[in-house]
Image (cartoon, rainbow, N blue to C red; front, side, top):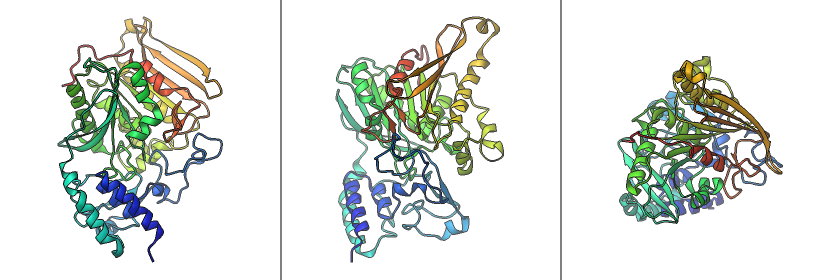
Length: 454
């Protein structure tokens, strides 16, 4: 008798395979579904995710937006255990020697798409021939992928970028008012389990691009890089300039700027959760590329370099023995930053907003002179409430010229969700304030005057 669960997986795998997403299809067939992200340590999903009366009420819950739990596999077990439905951390065709981790944090090196040696390991025999036939039917189109769709004004087009550190797909929105002029670019980094289309729908950023005339780049994190599609903010190799995911994202951004003759002095980056953590990593490692950064429900740069560090930081600590905090103290950036965080966030503790702000404030304080401090530098605090929505506190740090350099929003009663977003996307809280609009307002106050992005 055919297992109905396997039938549903095969149907979804067929859809993904026809879309050219072979690794994602294989992961689903082997049981690495997003629903499994709260397994491993026996922990339940955070209480405020999916509970009635919250921004997530009524939605099918498919794991937290951020990495919340993990299961560490012994080195000996990892070296001997084959890929199977019980472990989503083993990718078909990848050597299993050495320590491995099965968690929402996912894996390291992506394999080459279209080549999945041993790709039917762990499948029931009844499905192996069908999978092989389906895979072979799309291998040639997948191998040929890499040419980008022609980006037309008013269109949401797909593309791909590769360098020596890897390959990432992306979606690019160019407003219908684009006629070759040098428009600003906003880079949007989605959270775990999300994708560019979902993130665009939830943040309304494409609609705002039409209204305010800017382009939007949405890099996509594949399951081959992380089983929950989280950006790998917690890995040392992905916290460096000219290496790992920061180098891929920076290179992709530069390519889009060059291809469409965009304004290199007005390039901004924003992200949610794992995307927020990676956004601040980009601000730390590429301050010459990004004129301002938006961090929503994120964490500081380099506060974690391992799974235990990451879980400790997410829960409000600094990681085991304080090691993560010590590493993070050495980083700061002069890139202007706007930070959003809900004070009821049970996935990434709200204290992380203060830690993120400290990395930017440290740079600002370090660059001040006595005369600057005697100028117009000041801090203002504003209380407000969205009509029929959340109350908030906005704290703004101004420089000696009176310009806002750091803006921090604490959204009262909000959980782990994009503030003011649309219910058409996942992990959003429509009860505001509107983080996308506020970030754009802040971004437009800043540019990279006289700085090169080469």
